Length: 201
Image (cartoon, rainbow, N blue to C red; front, side, top):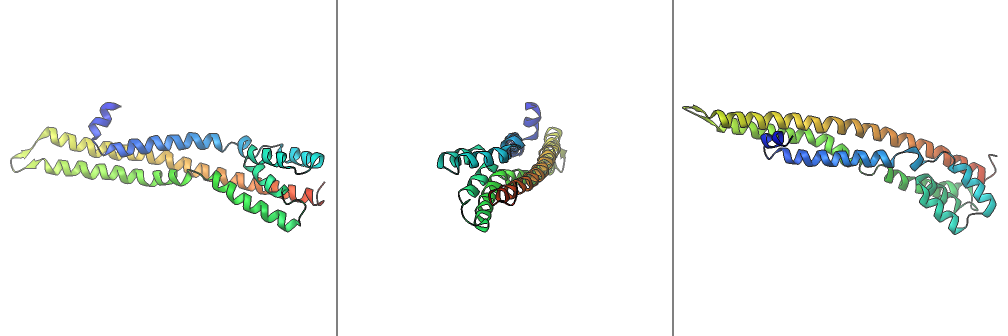
């Protein structure tokens, strides 16, 4: 691998950095976007039970808000449980926007890597071509310089695609995952509002 990097020349180093960032973001998002971390299945039932037993006290709301993004939304709603349905719903929507922002964290960076990596590979290709043409003289070209230029061009093109394709796939995957989680949280929040205001058992 090190030999390939050396053969590709200095233009490959931004691609190596982009690949490291991409892998780190993918691993972090896989961990953070698990359903058990974002919207635990039994959280609504436990929240309603705790609210009926002890009300919306500060300790309960603090623990709930720190438990998960869905818990943060529930806590925002329960702080306004004694107000009208509209006020409670509005506070949930505000908390929901903040939670969605957290769920989308690092995804713009992953999308940027997916878009920029082929361009970085193209830059390496152009630099390799410049070296190839620069090696040409009226009496002929230097085979060593010619071979190095071809290596820079081809390795950078290939590595740019190797970085971009998985980054784009996982970017699309995580965007779909976030959209699905947002729908689930919206449904759970509506159930909480309806239960607190006596519209649902």
